[in-house]
Image (spheres, rainbow, N blue to C red):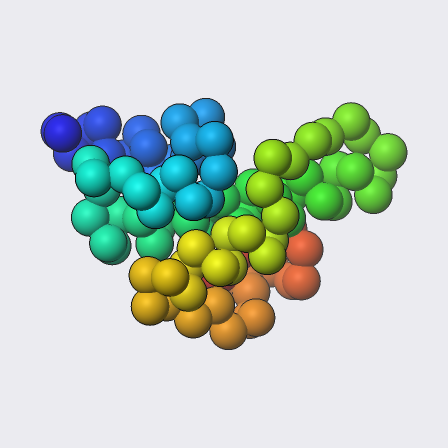
Length: 92
């Protein structure tokens, strides 16, 4: 897989994987790339939560719990601190 392909998967994981678990199962990404993609997924779920609270139609296939469980499976502990606030922020 090229570096461009990897960056595409990291930058938009919800378009390429059906769930955080499916991302974990991928043989095409390194551990570091999976963590980066899951952090991006975390940010996308938070943005969808904000949109939903503002009465904008939004649907998420995965919850933050799913994303954080996948990160933990990779040995990365999401510490709950987020840049930019509780929702709409992203994992450090």
